[in-house]
Length: 305
Image 1 (cartoon, rainbow, N blue to C red):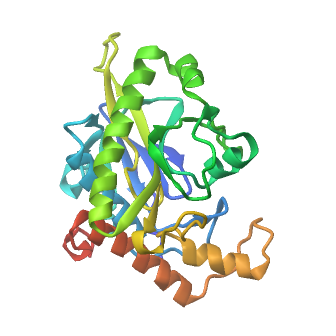
Image 2 (image 1 turned 45 degrees about the horizontal axis):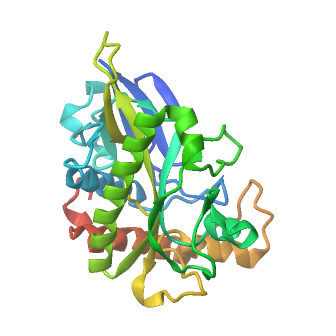
Image 3 (image 1 turned 120 degrees about the vertical axis):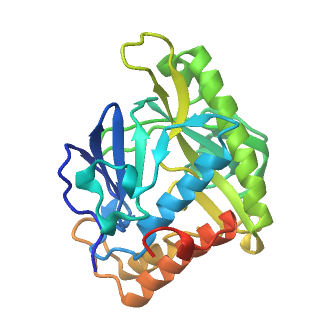
């Protein structure tokens, strides 16, 4: 199998666990979503077929759905709009040509349930990201209302640090922090409503926001939504039928991979164990199903099929 990440004749800006980033010239970046999959911060040897297409299709869908809340950096997902050297058939359906943005140094996380690192902190201190929330909550309980819970962006190899809103203000300024919180909560509300209609609960998600400035401009610029949006990689989706307070449901994402790796007693250091075909297939099915059910579209209709 291939992870669909060929070397392009463009300046290579960054290689992440899943995406490759290239300089497309004229203030543009080209994002290529591969089929690579990471678990416990280690990239697996086996790619998940169509994962890159799902991440791209789902992000493109949400960019379009949320434009009335905040603009975004997406220019095109069409191969014909890319620099000629990048117009490769194998990249169909997994590319985003984007405006270059100056990314905020915070992750814009919104949480509607007490789970993950929020549950760990709550058990220890009664707070979530340093903010007091109602007492007596149990694991995976729904919060009275979704809350904005930013984090820092850690250097490679480190972990993000959960921070409170005052710390976010210190990092980006009061006006920008207020705007980031407002649009993040509005986007989450819309996405959560859509997810519930499809039988899912959106427990939490991470938005990436940045500022786009016109060349030569020293003005405040335009706040935009960037990177990936409301995908299974950036969001915690649960099946609504599996949820009950006091128990965290399995995530509707790469949980089959996590479960398999946990069953081996692997120390979570490279190299990772080989993934059986059935685990890869089950993971692919979850990604495709999440896109088709939540976005109401068929992946067969997205380029690259």
